[in-house]
Length: 464
Image 1 (cartoon, rainbow, N blue to C red):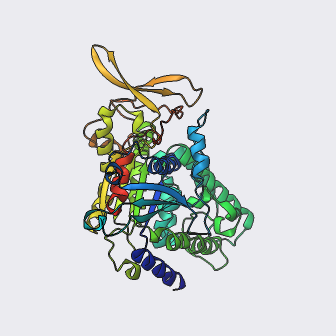
Image 2 (image 1 turned 90 degrees about the vertical axis):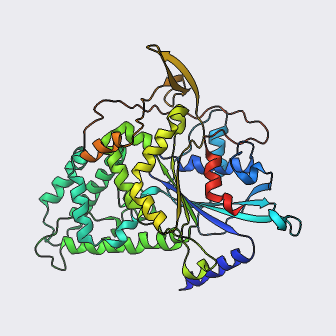
Image 3 (image 1 turned 180 degrees about the horizontal axis):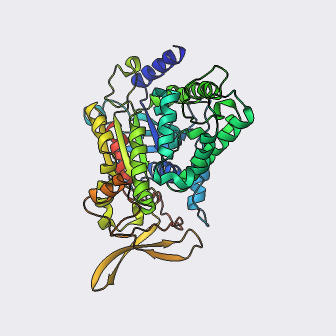
């Protein structure tokens, strides 16, 4: 109740004085959350490359500047360090998101219409909340009992796509007796094997790796809240059994880890961008694509989409705009960007339909937060082929890439993925990781990108 009163007072203050937009940025590993935030903020401060952001194109954004954080209990997003990593003499990709962080960017914007001459410029605060996508995978646990979660997790681990990663853990749970009295050494072994399985699945390009904190334990490492594992339910479950102990720890995990994240951060967002590494999943094969589709469907059921109104501070906030952004569009020639967008939309069809039904506006875009390549057209076998060229991440040498032709119909990828095919029957897709380009920025220009201005217009343009 105290938290709700505090949020209501803060939101009413925002409605009456300087408006605040709370933008959540998430995505699963390798999606590029850190680079997205860094480039977005840099390009809002220096707006020379933002022609599709209408307020910038009209010259109404007078200035943009970083403010002290409004929440003193959260780490600040290290914008300056990440920008230095990308724009330095030896550019490199910054470290990926490991925990939640925030950053406030304030924009002084000239008003439109009749208010132009009657009032001075307004200040709009953009509060960016960066959090690991793996944490989102935990939110569906709120509605699952330990019995239901265990059954689902074991069934997923037994799928052919995960056999190589889950064999050791499955063998251990099949050898144990969940009805036996709790043995802490055995419990730690089960939790360690379960964690190793999740880490191996993520390294193999699979997306469903809940509970997320098992891979990012922080100060909870070694605690009972992270020392449990799914178990097959026995016929008898005595109060001192391994099953009951793990059930209590699972409920503690939801209470101590998942619920505070939802209540204090996730439920207070206005806008959300979900970054999707669709190209990486396509490169890893049909099973990785199907795993990504399932993970994104689970994630998006947790959003509270709907229209916000002036009663939002009293009735609870809702996310009224959700952007699904397929990252690394610079790994493709621009002639294939439409196909990448269509594949992303197809991956999220069900979740997007639910969001629209509840009043949220959704959009899919193919973007590159920082453009790492240049395009080139070459002639192969008498026909022109679009390729991209950039610096190899491995040794910095110049490399050219033709990743393969994405199909015009997304069903050509999604159908074999749903069937559990081992590989793409009649095509091959390759992704070579590029290093950041060496930047020489003109005054007033932010880092080069693809459609980051269109993403910004959709996410915050209506509030400027």
